[in-house]
Image (cartoon, rainbow, N blue to C red; front, side, top):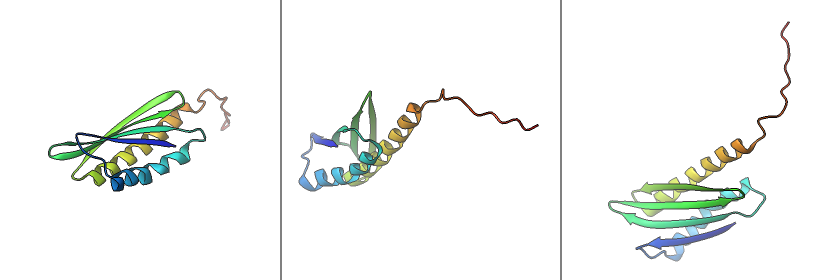
Length: 105
């Protein structure tokens, strides 16, 4: 997984960058192919804001979150991305597979 972290009108420190990478590593378990994540951290007074674009084969997923501090915003963002990926993978399943119908007669 490739994670690109940058700040909008704030400096992204090394501890923040490591925290983002640590939290988003769990997303990698959902895919066999390499994925790319662009994370933007910023301050929208009075809250801290984090948003991400996740590029998976065939689609780009977007999520954003706000929190009282940057670490809380990153936690919320990771949770939202996890739910988005699960939803995306569920939609990708073949819903046209033949069903087995059992008669209750």
